[in-house]
Image 1 (cartoon, rainbow, N blue to C red):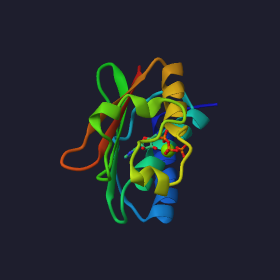
Image 2 (image 1 turned 90 degrees about the vertical axis):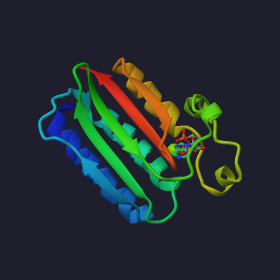
Image 3 (image 1 turned 90 degrees about the horizontal axis):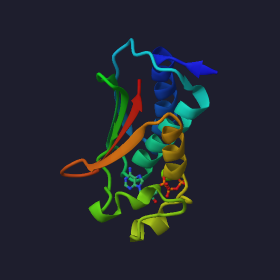
Image 4 (image 1 turned 30 degrees about the horizontal axis):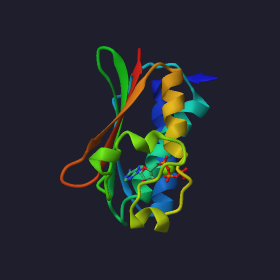
Length: 149
Ligand code: ATP
Ligand code: MG
């Protein structure tokens, strides 16, 4: 079962509400209406769920998370930005390795198995896309997912 843009937006909304209740983060959702992209529902749900779960989990209470869904000339682009604890630049590639968690005190306090982003990357590669990590200065991290049209 594949979905198109309007459904993608509703998946983001549903997942945002779950995250909001669990973590009390405010979510800004910036999405234009018509962006057609065929992707399996379960795949898109896993991508957005893992990115939002991380954004909320590695932020403190009431930290803002922004989600954008847009299209450029080559890709469907999904951007998730948070203002949380961030990730050291030298570890930006490692976080996609299975079972890798950042070697900081917070990792031991915040629950997780280190598998979420490995799954996200696998799914994105199935669609021949890529995921890019950058710092959200002054605080937090930005995940940009590009899925080719
Ligand atoms: P799981 O997702 O399996 O429950 P996890 O969240 O630890 O566990 P990943 O989602 O794969 O695993 O993330 C790997 C590591 O990358 C995390 O342990 C954390 O150190 C870092 N990380 C991921 N997302 C963020 C984020 N939004 N802010 C800060 N650190 C992050
Ligand atoms: Mg995770």
